[in-house]
Every structure is written in C-alpha cells, then in structure tokens.
Image (cartoon, rainbow, N blue to C red; front, top):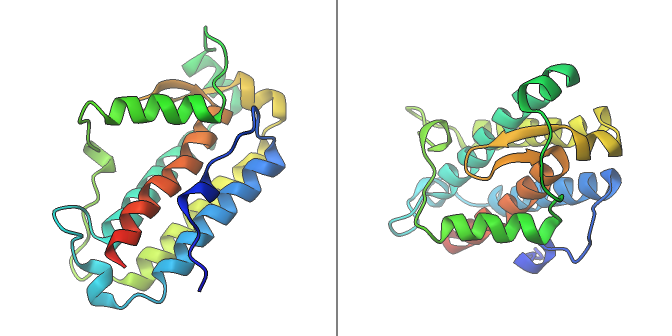
Length: 187
C-alpha cells in the first residue's frame, strides 16, 4: 500500500475552487480510510503513547465533519443572518493552516463535543463507516454552494472563529493531514 506523505495534504494554490476542494477532501479522507481499514482491532483501539488511539482520531474527525454538516445544512439565509460577513481579507489555504497552528502552539486541546469518547463495545467497522458517511456528505455539500457563496457565507469554527465556507473547507482538509500524522504513529 502506498502511504501518502503529509505533503500531499498541502497546497500552494491561492484559491481552491469547488472541484479542487472536493477532490482534495475526497482524496484526503479516503487516504485515511485506506490506511486504517487493514489495521487490526487491538491496534486500532490502542492509545498511541499518551495520545488518542487511531479510533479516537477517527471519531474526532467524524465529530468535526458531523458538526460542520449540521451548519452547512442550514438555509443560506440563516447562515448569512446568523454569522454575517467577515471584515477582513480572505485567508488562503496557507493562512488558515498558519492561524490554526499558531493556536495549537498555545497548548489548546480539543474540548467539549470534539473530545472523542468511544462508546461501550466500539466497532471499528461502525466508526469507519460513520467517518466515510459524514465526510462524503461534507464533500457533497460543496455542490450546494456557488463559488461566490463559499467566499461570502460564513460559519464559526470553535477556535479560528468566523471563517468563510471556503476557509472552513481549507481547515477541514488540513485537519485530515494533521490527524493522519497522529494515526501513522499508531500504525
């Protein structure tokens, strides 16, 4: 199996269009799936040192996608009314990543609904299936927005605050690579 390097998750593109974003997201989450599917159950659920297990990383990514999908399912008018518009220049991919890494460097950790808590008797198959379902939905939501709407409509990120939808998609794409590094440590 070919293991993608983290560099496959970064881009030197000023703006990723909808087709590029969709392909990048799909490639990113299926890359993770290809790497975790062959892992045996004990490895999948074992902590990685003092960090989250592969299963917990998968659950965290699923929780993130599920939460964003709920926001993206709101009527566009509600998004516009609830979040308004940003009053700054748009961030490109690198700026979103840079801002996120700056926040992580302060020691901030996931909290609340984004801290993965595995259910009793968790199933690897169910966790991976849910991961795929929510990430396919996330990629498909791109089809419901125009390029202009991706730059005009906003949504709140738990730590990055107000982002355009395009910026949020940049974050979600980077988030795969960020957690892929952790997952690869457990393989």
